[in-house]
Structure formats: structure tokens, C-alpha cells
Image (tube, rainbow, N blue to C red; front, side, top):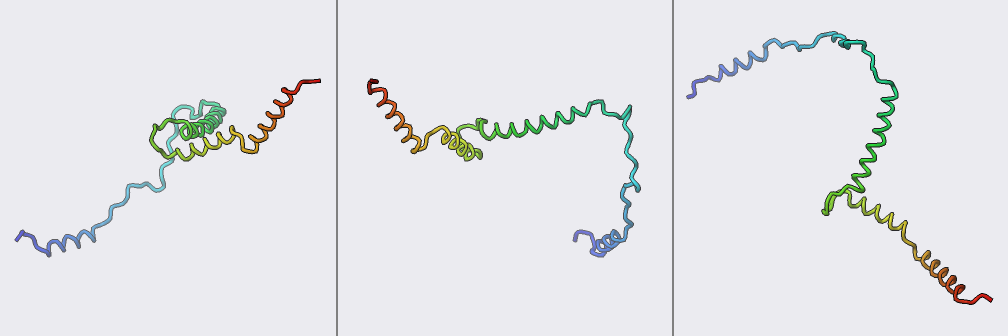
Length: 121
């Protein structure tokens, strides 16, 4: 109907299985690396590498802290909101008095006000 025969298809498949394999385009052993043009020496002093590593060790965490705690992502809820709430609670608890401290402060105020109201003899 279509003008092809199954035997031709089978023969072409069999022929492709016996075809010789192509060799990969790889040299054995690999060629040595090419030499740099010029002197080949790095003109930068060693302290440049140490300095850049120290700067990157300081800058990367600083950017992470800034983006987590201070960057404005808008009014919507975002992934850093729980961490920001936790940090805000810690700061607020640091700057507020506990109930025991408030009672102690009231007692000290009452004691100081009674000393000021009583005349010295």
C-alpha cells in the first residue's frame, strides 16, 4: 500500500548493527597544557589574595544579615517574617522589665518618695 517492504526495513536495521564504530576524537595521552605568553608570573602581591578573601568573608554574611533582618520586602508575608518576629521579641524582652523587676522598681520609687516627703531633722 505505501510502497515499502518489511524485509528492507529489517535488512537496514541489521546492517546498522554491524557497522564499524567511530573512534572518539580524544588524544592519548592528552597534550600538555599550553604555556602562558609573557613571564607567566602573577604581578599581584600575595596579600591581595588574603585581603580579598577576608573582605568576602565579611561582606557575604553582612549581606545575608541585612537581607534577612532589614530589607523591605513590602507589607506581604515573606519567608523571613518568622525570623524577624523572633528577633523583635528578643529585642523587646531585652528592653522591657520582667514583673519581678517592675515590683522592685515600684518599691524603690515608694522608698525614695517617702524619704523626700519626710522632713530632715
